[in-house]
Image 1 (cartoon, one colour):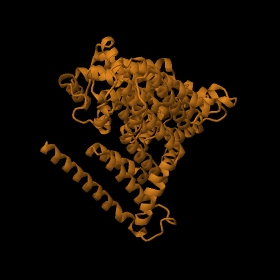
Image 2 (cartoon, one colour):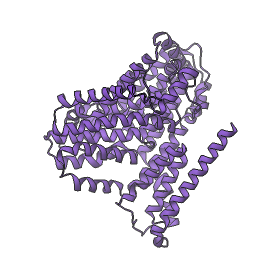
Image 3 (tube, helix red, strand yellow):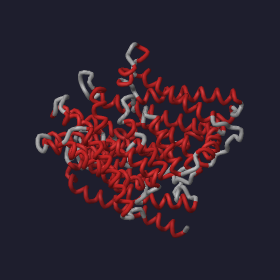
Image 4 (cartoon, one colour):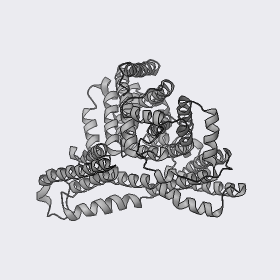
Amino acid sequence: MKKKQNTSKRIRWTSLLFSALIVMLLFPIAAYAAGEEASEAVSHFYKTPWSLLPPIIAIGLALITKEVYTSLFIGIVIGGLLYSNFNFEGTLTHVFNDGIVSVLADAYNVGILIFLVILGIMVMLMNKAGGSAAFGRWASTHIKTRAGAQLATVALGILIFIDDYFNCLTVGSVMRPVSDNSKISRAKLAYVIDATAAPVCIIAPVSSWAAAVASYVEDGNGLYLFIQTIPFNFYALLTLVMMVFLSLTGMDYGPMAKHEKNAKENGDIFSGMNAYAEAAAENSNPDGKVIDLLLPIVVLIVSCVIGMIYSGGFFEGSSFVESFSNADASIGLMLGSAVALIITAIYYFARRILTFKGLAEAIPEGFKSMVPAILILTFAWSLKAMTDSLGAKQFVEALVQNSAGSFQSFLPAIVFLIGAFLAFATGTSWGTFGILIPITLAVFPLGNPLGIICVSACMAGAVCGDHCSPISDTTIMASAGAQCDHVTHVSTQLPYAITVAGVSFVSYIIAGFVPNAFITLPIGIILMIGTLFVIRNTKIIQ
C-alpha cells in the first residue's frame, strides 16, 4: 500500500514538474506581450500549429500520469496563456470567463448535463427497485458464457442507435450486472459500449449524428448523401466486425489482456481501479422483477425519440425525417429523460417497490454518481473552447484546402487521417464534420463517387479520433456507463481502435483507386479479419 502511495506521489510530482517545464519553455516565446491589455491583444499563435498544443499536452499528460482532471486543466491553462500572449490577467479571464464559465452557461451543454444527472437518478431508481438485480439474475440463467454476454452488449448497443450519449449510459446500466456475472472486466465493457455508440450512430440514418452530418449539406440533399456514405464508412463497419470477432474467439491483446485475465482468473473486474466505488454499492429491493428495468428503459427510449422530433418541429407540421434533421439533441434528450423519470417514479410507486423516501435519496445519489463524468465533460468542453479561440479549426481548414488538389486518389486516406487527428486533438466529431465536409464538397461535386468516399472518410476519421480521444464526450460517457476508470478505458481500447484505423486507412487507399463499395468493403472486412488472425497467431496478446 505504501509503495503504491509513493508511486502515486511520484506520478503527481512528475506531472507538475513536466507541466511547469512546458510553461517555462513557452513563456519566453511571447514574453514581450506580457504587458499588453488582454482585451486588445491578438494572439500570436492564432491559426498556427501552436493552436493544437493545449489538447496535445492535455492528452499526453493524461495518458502518462493517469491524472485526467489535472491534465485537462493544465491544457486549459496553457491554452489561456497562448491566447493572451502570456498576460496574467488575460490568461485568468480567458480560462474562467471565456472557458469554464462560458461552457457551463451554454444552453446546449447544460441540457446535456441535466440529461446526465437524470439518467444517473434513473439508474439509482432501477437499482433501488431491484430491476437491475432481477435482470442480472435472469441473465445469469440465460446468458452463460462470456461470448454471449459480450454479443448481447453489442446487440443492445446496435439497437440503441438514436444518440451516442443515450447509448453509452443506457447500455452500461443494463449490461453491467450481466458482464459482472460473466467476469468481464469493466475495461472490456467500456470498450464494447464505446465501440457501439458513435460507430453505430454514424451509420444509422435515423440518429442525431445523421442529422448533424445532413445539416452541413445544402439543397436538402444531406440525408441522401449520408445514406450513400454508409458502405464506405470503413472504420464504423470494421469496428463492429472486430467486436464480433473478439467476442467469439475470446481474444484480447495489449493492456486489455491484463484486465481480462484479472477478471477471469481473480474475479477482479476493476483491476484495482474502481473510480465508482461508492456508486457500485447499492441496496436493492429483493422483490424487483425484470420488467422493473425493461419498462423504464423502453419508456426512456420512446420519450427521447419523441423529445428529439419535438425539438425538430414534428408537432408543428414537419415530417419525421425533417424533424430529426433539425433536432436539438440537448433539448430532446433532456425533455425525454425528464418525462421518463416522472413515468418511472409513478410506476414504481404503483408497484409499491419504492417509497417517496427512496426516490428522494436517489436524487443526490444519482447526481453524485455522475460527478466524475460531469467534471471531465466540463474540462473537456473548456479545453475545446481554448482550442477554438486559438483558431485550430481555421488552421486545419487552410491546411486541407492547400493540399486538396494533389494526390486525388489518395485523398480519401488523407482526409481520414486529418479527420482522425483533428477529432482526437479537439475531442469532437461534430466539429470535425463542420470543418472537413464543406471543404470536401467544395472540391468534388455532389455526384462524384470520390467525393462521397471523401465525405465518408471524413466521418470515419472523426469517429476514429473521437473513439481514441480521452477528452471526447462519447469516450467519457462510455467510461461513466460502464463505471470504469476513464484513463483505464482510454489506454485499454487504444490498441483496438488503432488496429481498426490502420485497416481503414488501407481500405481508403484502395477505395481511392476502386470507388466501388461492393469491392472495397469486402476487401476491408477480409483485411480486418486477416489482421486479427495475424495478431492472434503472433501471440501479441500479452
